[in-house]
Length: 104
Image 1: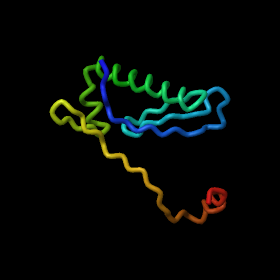
Image 2: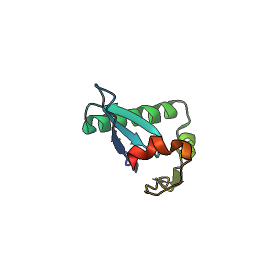
Image 3: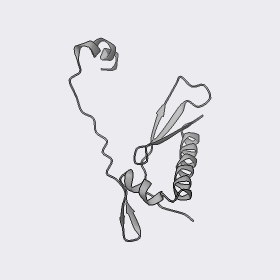
Image 4: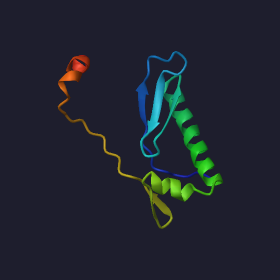
């Protein structure tokens, strides 16, 4: 069955890893996986999502799991949680200024 579940994927580079330097993250389900390139990371994330959903269903807790991560049932649809990505500034303690100065 093909399920159309609205998900966001954030793909980041994790240069520390030689074998899987790309991380794919789904904030709605708080699941991440890694791969050798962005496409592989996405495939691995898709597989991780399937495993988590299948395991929750096997335990009879799929509806509870989806509710806990913010999905709301509406008829035969699932309304995803609202995920907001924004850039904003914040004041950091002076003790962190030196460590963070390379980022700004």
